[in-house]
Each structure stands twice: as C-alpha cells, then as structure tokens.
Length: 359
Image 1 (cartoon, rainbow, N blue to C red):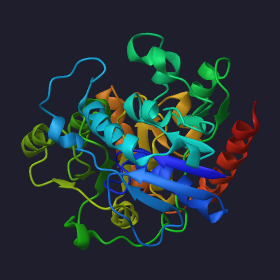
Image 2: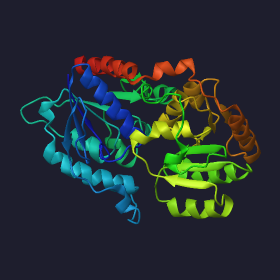
Image 3: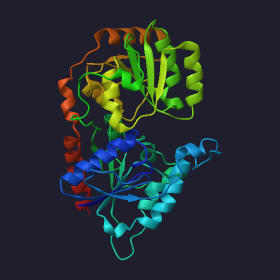
Image 4: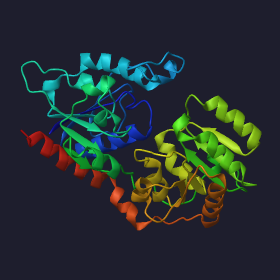
C-alpha cells in the first residue's frame, strides 16, 4: 500500500502522538509498504519511510494568541499553518490511504480532491481524543473518515456504530525501553533520594501542579518533570515553594527517555482521562511502578500491576506514591509484550487493507 502520515510535529518534537504514529509508520515501511511522512521537522537517519518537510509555525509562538472556534488553542493555530503548507506539498493521487490525528485543518487538507484520480482512504487516529468523530456542532460537523483507529475501548464503544472502527492500542519500542541501571548523574538527579518522574506537557489537563503538591507530601522524594508547555513558569514557581532543592525540569530527546525512566523509582501521571498514555507502557517496559488515576481505561493498559487511586484525593495519592517508592519494581510485567510496535503495526496493516478494499 502507498501510505501517508501527516502531523505538524513529526521530526520536530517527540510527544506521545508523534512517537506513536512515527513508530507505526516505521514498522509499516519495514513490512514493505511505501510510506511517506509529512512533518515540520527535518529528515532523520535510519528511517525506513520517506520524509517530506512541510513548514509550520510551532505552537509555542501562539501561546498568547486569541482563541476562538475553530482556532481553539495554540495547537489549532499550529495546525492551520501546517495544513496551509501541506496543500502545496501533498498530492492525493499518490496514496492509497492517509493517516493523521490532527483536526480540523490537517485532516481537511488531506481530504482535498484528487484531480484525475481517486481520493485516498482517510484514516483518523484518536491519539488526541475522539471528539472530532463524535461531535456534531461547529467545525466538527465537517469531520469524515473511511476508518477510525480507536486507541482505547471507550472510543471504540462510542464510535463503532457510526464509523468503520478498529481497536488498536499504542505501544513502545521494547528493544529500547528495558529494565536496567539508571544514570542519574547524566540528568543531574540526586543519588541519595527516591526519584518520582512525571513525563507530561505542562498544560492544565496533565495536572502537573497537583503532582508537585503530591510529591511535596513525601519528606525526601525528588520530582523530575520531563516536558514543557505554557505552565512552565507556574510549575517552577510552585516547585520552588513546595519542593525547594527537590525539583528538576528537563526537555529531552526521545533517545534519552529510556535512561531517564531507568533513573527514576516511580512514574506519576496525573491526567484524569488520557486517550492512551504511551508513558504508562514505556514505564512498565522499563520495570518502573506506575502511579495514576484509577479508571477502567487505565486498568485496560496496566492491568493489576499499577498503584491506582483517585488522584484528586491527596491522602490516597500520597499513600500510593509511598507504596510505589517502597516497591521500586525492576522487572518488566509479562503483559507488556502485547504492546510491541511490530504487533501494533500488524493490526494497522490489517485494518488499512480492509479500508482500502471497502467499496
């Protein structure tokens, strides 16, 4: 199959959606499909797919811009600049199927007519939520797709009666994310304290500020946050008040993340409703205990191995954090094997063939 993946952040940032879709693109290319990736970064060595640079203005430059429908956030502004350029670089007739998780502008650009040829199948992946597929108002009424990849059971149940759907989780590179010795000196982390890791964008939904308050309950724990975002100054000011000398914030490349996981004693993730949360699988693959918000969706990912609670309850959260730091598990749970990217890509391949063959 001739496949295209399009997302503004490809090859420029290594957030969850970018890592997930690029991993699928790489595995599909290794399976022999002709895969082209459109992104605003630069080519990287070692990719089995073809990369095509499409310029975009990074979302960070829009943090102070006005927000209104359909430009509801800095992400939407970035998406608009990318989609505008994508129209000049993307030729629909060159592909059998195109995949994105960005709506509205990138998805609408990929749906433009194909003069002299059939328009490729439109596959939308719910990396950032299933709201475009479910909503009926505002710009969401223009959403269409030929296939919807649902990355958790809730999305699948909510959408299977309207769209052609497949339930396919995200995964992890199980050759890179492995148990093993950490390297705290490399990241400037203390050797004599337990280390709690948060891998989160500094935005409201990730509740990093609440995570800072939770770790402050523990006398000796050091919190390291790997991520960036509009709340960076607020987070650093709060940490200075509540965790003096016990806080670090890092911005790392994807290549550094396995060593960072191995350098921590527990992963804390505070989102109440992640679409999936690649960080959970990556942490488990490194043998790191997970502390998160208890929900059926998260239990579907982590099984019975995690320390889950109502993270809005400070007392319960403090207890679970303390228990996780005592355990400091260093073995990979057996169920992590189902999240290997090669297995996930095989499921994508099967679904794409169904979509391409459908009348």
